[in-house]
Image 1 (cartoon, rainbow, N blue to C red):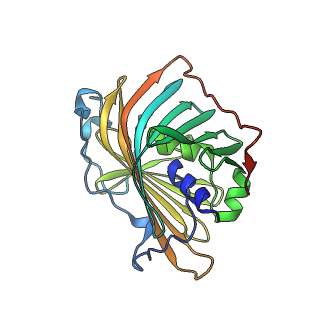
Image 2: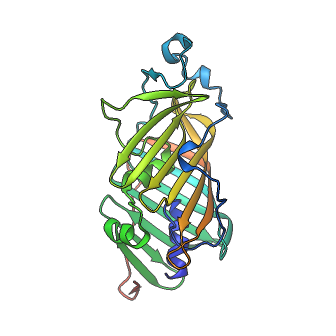
Length: 286
């Protein structure tokens, strides 16, 4: 696969499922990840959300609990962020990324370097389009196309969830939350993907997301950190994404690590605009 496409998937913070050449530890058990703490940085969570679960009554491990997971509701989101990416072939430190999101509809991003824009992307529920301004090229992908190529089902809700920290799938009425040691666990399934959502007991915020694709066992683990108050919500200003992917060449698992650090985030009811056009002189790349 073209290295520029690989880099773009890193910018998204989503599925860079290609041979990244850092072997996974053999005794890793993806379905048994534990969150040991429930601390938040920045704003004090109790000053924002004081109505914690069931008056903090003790419950046995594995028991079902009744809570609502706190999610961020917005019309539009704007963010200025730093992006870092590490694999065997590439190491990107603190690239500048501007993000604009229309909830459940559009994700727009612009990457700048050395004082000018080098790339732009537009993500919708139907497709993903990238413009490489440096090489005067562009790429168009559908989700089925990407899913077939990387043997992992990618979706718009999953990408959006990586950015804003909401559940990637709506919670169904029959989906129960269980107490598991130091966290609350909500398990969901979408197609071939099993998603474990680890929720902070005090904040009721998603703290970790782990998506595992069957039968390949390719996985994405997302840890949210640095929670701060944003328009009466708790928003994770740092996301750490770990990808473990089996190489089709040697059948070994390799790892890629991505960090997104938001410097400034704003929620607004007014559209910021999503300027996006492809010059006729640009060449479409496959």
